[in-house]
Length: 208
Image (cartoon, rainbow, N blue to C red; front, side, top):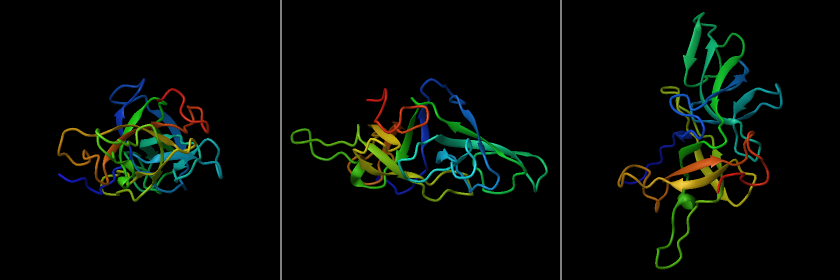
């Protein structure tokens, strides 16, 4: 089966020091006036209007706060507390209580945007792999139907201030979507590189 151009954000692969089902989620705050954030979206600090709060991330070398995994808030319309895997961008009376995965040793699976994330060459010639290189992301378009992110990996480079580092490729089970590392839209495993609990701006600390 060919890979599919169907981004799904950054999905938990394993949790480092945190185990299932919570993966050591951290509580953060989102302003009720902030835009939508979907499950699997990278998030960044909201440094322009409210220090200590977070927003949906944008591709850059700004420090990453983690990966959004859901929230709860007092609904203005429903007059009750609502638990959701995404923040729709409105309907909160007061701040939104967000849950993020920010364990510096966590790993995530995500779709690569192009053949940049492919293996090239053969074992009998020169084999090239994205593993060990850094990458950015494109936030994409999240789904209001299921609350899932539309983010995907992009901008593979050697720039040490990018938010993620590629640590592995998904190649099993053979024939499944995303497991062909020789064509576009393959799935890869990434870890945090430029993240608030990890030294940023100078490459990885503890990920090799």
